[in-house]
Image (cartoon, rainbow, N blue to C red):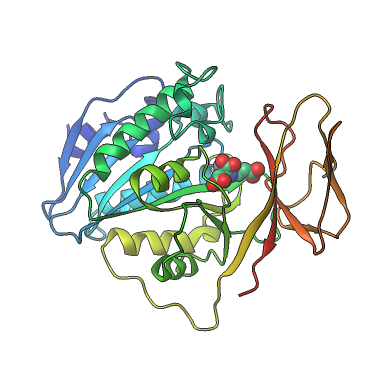
Length: 339
Ligand SMILES: O=C(O)CCC(=O)N[C@@H](CCC(=O)O)C(=O)O
Ligand SMILES: [Zn+2]
């Protein structure tokens, strides 16, 4: 058996291995590349890439936290295949994660609970504790903690695709951490990756990127790259921006200065819509695109105690989804920041 076959237990690549092992742990295996770099399989869907020479920064790239968001999974798997084929050399210590293998096999956002609400310790709470997604979130937190230990600086990109179409196809979310601002280099990375819109979150949460920001001190982003499609049905030509930017980062090359004509549009959260329970009514239609703007005075949601109307200037909806448990996010209302 070749070293590559051993890394993937005879499966053709990492994605195939992760799907085949979705219901069990994969034991640690190490593969040394021609230049001496190592690929360590830490568990199912978790690889650590260790270059011979790297700068002090460490990088986490995750995809498949929602199992039906397949395009970023295919992009990351393709980049790993290039590395294994010797097309370029590794220059950055990197943790690669395919988040929720069981939901990837099922072709669904999640199996029992939305894993992207179970970080920052939420996995230990009732009713989540002990469920497959809670166990996986706890495992990912532990692996990330270990990877971050003693790192000079840490960057995390959590790659997603959205349920609905979007007036702004590609956008990133920057988790809230008191008192910090987005570093210019990260803005340059987003433009390089063809992600021209950034939403600044207004409070910390229990997403993977919020966990890595708040608990590991990472510069983290959730990055939305397009629309959800099943494996094999993605037009990967729409993902070359992120593919090029990640390949360049994996090689350890510096971030290029962006084209002066490109500018990041920055949005902020005006209001977070939560499912308040039995009397909650959401007035945004099911099929509305992300970043659809509503005029001042429009009623967005109501319950027995509150009626929420758009304020003095238009507000745009992101991630509208009425089918969430009580207490969880039904959508975000956002507004472009005047710069
Ligand atoms: O399209 C949708 O409604 C959801 C897409 C998605 O999974 N988005 C992430 C955003 C996480 C964040 O707020 O940083 C999610 O909802 O988990
Ligand atoms: Zn997602």
